[in-house]
Image (cartoon, rainbow, N blue to C red; front, top):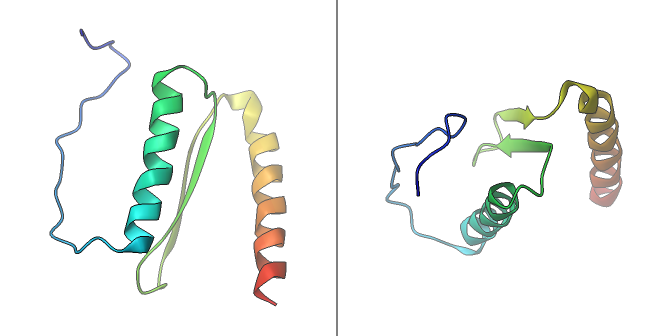
Length: 87
């Protein structure tokens, strides 16, 4: 299948990490989102990454410029829900 100009091929990186339940869960979520993206069923995606030691949090997103405000609002609601679950 020929690649579109907008698709970037990444060289796979294999980490020598023993897969546990948490790693498997992360991989499953990413694979689900990748499948939806390949099927053209997504227009926006936000990812929040937390390092294994909890020392760093990163956010990444891909969306239409008109989606930014809505995406930030949804992330704010999600953050509040997560914080309330901690208590």
